[in-house]
Image (cartoon, rainbow, N blue to C red; front, top):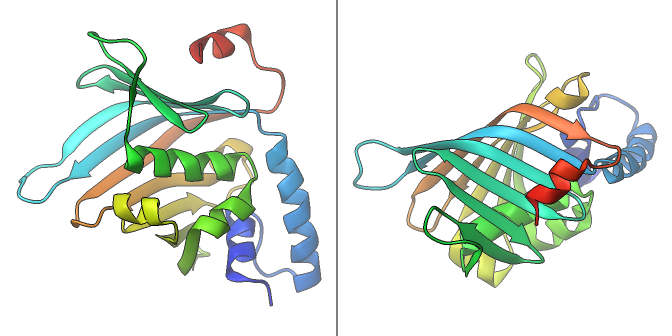
Amino acid sequence: MLSLFKTLVVLLSGSVLNQAVANQITLVDQLHQAYNQVVYFEADFTQEKHIKYLSKPLVSKGKIKFAKEQGMIWEITEPVWVKTKIQNNQIFKTTSYQTNKQVNDVQMKAVAQILTELLSSQLDRVESQFNVSALQMDETNGIWQVKLLPKAVMIKKALHELLITGQVSNEFDQQGISRIKVIDNNGNQTDIAFESVHIKTGTLTQEVLDAFQ
């Protein structure tokens, strides 16, 4: 039987689960190579922070950009503009009052790290830092969900668990991760939903490169 993590790899790539084990292992290798070709990922997101003792969630909207050799950008456009850039394991925030101020946000770093590793096909790193504790699949609707529990001490301090939801689809831009839920050690939850996903496998435009400067 395939390991639970290899099954996750198959799900993340939108492949079929009922193939022969030998074919699945071969497919995992092929999908590994396919992810290596993804150089750019962009999507709109809606984020809801559910904090204890607050009657309503804190809602923000924006865009996420990931370039394999450049890093990741979380740009909040509503309700207040904030751009967070993650490069070389460092976090820089830009607001209306400050530019590229280095900050320490362990939770943001953990979420950015797992997304980077999945999109960069560094799946061995995900497995080294997280335990896959549960995996569910709705074959009728093509929806999957996996629960990840942190192994690393620093990540454990920032969050209790991650729930990643995705979709199986024949459409390249519609498969993969669609939602992330972060639960911290105080029971607070952050829900991030992605839509309008755009994936690029060719050479990046100068406009995209400039965004990471």
